[in-house]
Image 1: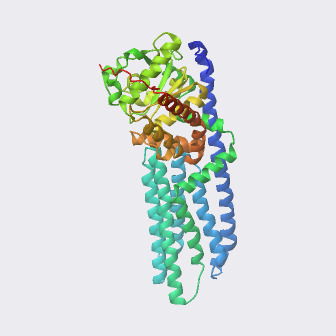
Image 2: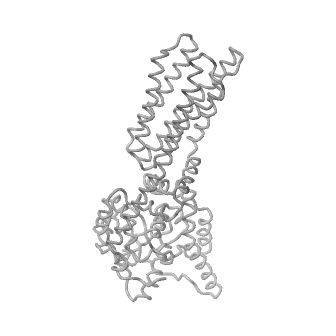
Image 3: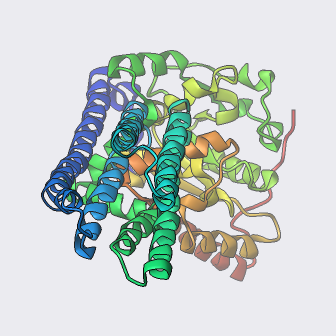
Length: 483
């Protein structure tokens, strides 16, 4: 492990602003490449649709001939593919672009229905009236869902309802096409081209109802347009910070960064994560880079076991440096009156600490914020070797807890991680979606990063067993102090 550096070495405004600016530029480049690729595919698909429609489908309609099966299939496939490709284009955080896609869908469906109504009205025969009314109703349903989506303010909710719009179009289309085919077969004893329209609509419906399939496709496109994992990590950092300018982001973090001396921390602060103004008063403003350790932990691990691990780390630090460590501890250092602002500064806070100390218990890898902290520390330039790991195990149940911790590494899945605030989970998973396209790719990246944590825990298990074999204890009972 490298020796702790002074604050001037750890944090330089100019260098850090360049880092943030580079991350934001990377996100912009990734957006343009991905969106540009989808739009190019959409335009190419729309061109083929127009060619097939006017040169083949419309010609048969004007000649009052039955449209061939393959012509039905081609025209319907191109139309549904246009809807799919355009819906895949926006990132999960791009509110403006998602609204553009929805507005485009509304325009296409409204114009299509109006043109049909001006030419066909409600038809002449009873069967024509049934099918045309169905056509108008399906279009109206799709437009209504799209209009409701346009009113959504949350990007996550807007993204969900945008795909619901696709389902609102595809599901009735499948039912309508099957009904038309069945009626034609029953009354005219022949198979018409309507059957061909069922297959593209069913494929579109299955795709819209399968988020994992969408994520896999988007992940492959992310890898194709940008194969540098480091750049995708930088894009994630930009998502966390938000749309503020790099200089403003650093200025906000410098104004909000606070630390406390370990000797001020008590066991009572670990009992619960409920806001407590008294604890906030323990922390004091500090310069970025003047903090010895960012404490990363899960509030769902055993409090007494975590306190013993904290005291053990403090003892080792005091032995090495001859003084109390200064720490960033969430419950004391986050402004409880403006939590969102502090969380947006998280990447800068992590960079402003000399090391990351992970207190890993059996629930640590199941908490999404814990994973984001490790990920962010590494992608902000922190060395994996500077991540210190302390196992959080209960007294008398060390072996059982060690095994539980090791088990969490083998079954890690970021999509299964939990957050106290459901909105935070949606926002963080949207960040993963933007940078990596799928949680599967992100899982691979995280497993590579936390492999160091895994090895540290494994070494601690081995040391614990060695001490136990000689009748000693690797984790002596430490006094639990309260306020």
